[in-house]
Amino acid sequence: MATILYLCLLRTMSDSSDLSNHTGTLFIVPTPIGNLTDITQRALDILSNVAAIGCEDTRHSRILLQHFGITTPTFAIHDHNESAQVNKVIQRLEKGDDIALVSDAGTPLISDPGFVLVRECRTQGYKVSALPGPCALTTALSAAGLPTDQFHFFGFLPLKQQAKIAQLRQLNQHDFTSVFYESPRRVLDTMRLAQNELSEQITVVLAKELTKSFESYISGSCQTVINWLEEDSAHQKGEFVLMFGPAPQVSDDISEPAKQLMQSLLSELPAKKASAIVAQHYQHKKNALYQWALEQKK
Ligand code: SAM
Image 1 (spheres, rainbow, N blue to C red):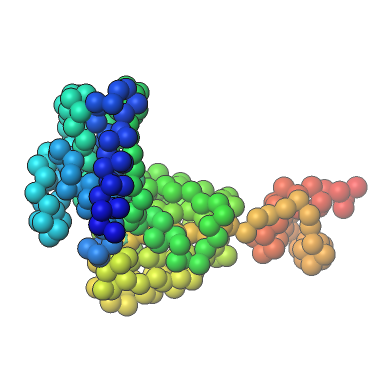
Image 2 (image 1 turned 45 degrees about the vertical axis):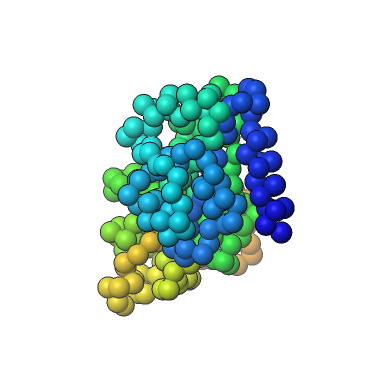
């Protein structure tokens, strides 16, 4: 068994060049998002056998590497030095060195550094090979109980309040699941804004501390999630993935109950006001109701 694994690894590492047989491969290696046993055997083998490991933070990754007895040399590559480091990595690949890229946790490039390096390696024809592994996005989504046939990952919400409100408001139009990473410092504020902006029919799922001892999923309305966060200050600590289910879709069709309510309201209110109330109540399009009201007057 060990021999087969070793041969597979050798094959992966030697079949590594788009340029020539002598250039190296850049391996994108996911690392655990909490539970150290979530690292794969292939990730450990590659981290042990490459010439060097590019780390978002070498001190952080050294703890993981030491835990697994890996002594491969490390170097820092992060948002602030990525452009400068790219050439050095490319020179090493050119020499035939295999290089691994890791971030502090999870999959590199997913709300983490590495994009500039991968783009440049691909542009210049070096082989880039990604290992599957831990990622908070897919972990949270796969157990949230929200539709996964279509989803959009937005990374972190904007820091500026107005931009954040605008993005949250957009969720009322999405017919797919929307996923955000969120910081413990902002999660309660974000949920309060979402409570003001979102249709009550959108399901929210907050996933906390995935793969760790206090892993939790809180699911329901914005108010349910706010109540849970406020119930105990410890609930606001840790790492979060915030997910919103699809918004109920409005159609041009006007249901019979909506028409009846429109009739009653039109005797007391202007068409615009009546349309707004009924649109909210029955999830109909305001414009369709307004047009219908005008037609009744003809
Ligand atoms: N590259 C990582 C990945 O693959 O998930 C994400 C890096 S991003 C800088 C860090 C954010 O991911 C955290 O602020 C949190 O929103 C989310 N995250 C990471 N680990 C998590 C965990 N164990 N539970 C919940 N969310 C997590």
